[in-house]
Length: 136
Image 1 (cartoon, rainbow, N blue to C red):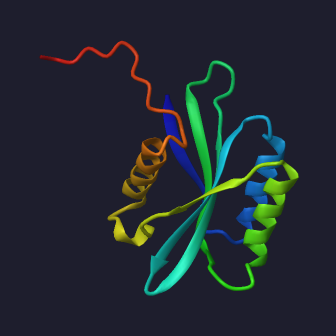
Image 2 (image 1 turned 120 degrees about the vertical axis):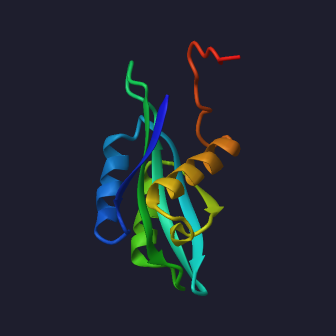
């Protein structure tokens, strides 16, 4: 199974697109996530939804808006809109503290790290290896 993070943006107007993706694909949602990370003493949130593969497809997408939502009190309107959308769909988000993407050399390493965290904690299915024949 191919598991890939698809970044919609940095968490500004694209949050509304992510919420619409959730509504349209409500029967496919595997889990929703709110990630927290720190950079320069400030905390930021990323939000994501993981969708189950369609029919025979071997693709597990994780749509994400990354690190554009500052952690403020009261809660930001963008984050509250995501939470309200999840409430409407009768879902709860999994909250995780992660490293900030700026601590990685490039975004692909960050995405691999994030997928590894999600697999390790059983929030997404394990990687399936079909017909694996190691060379001895």
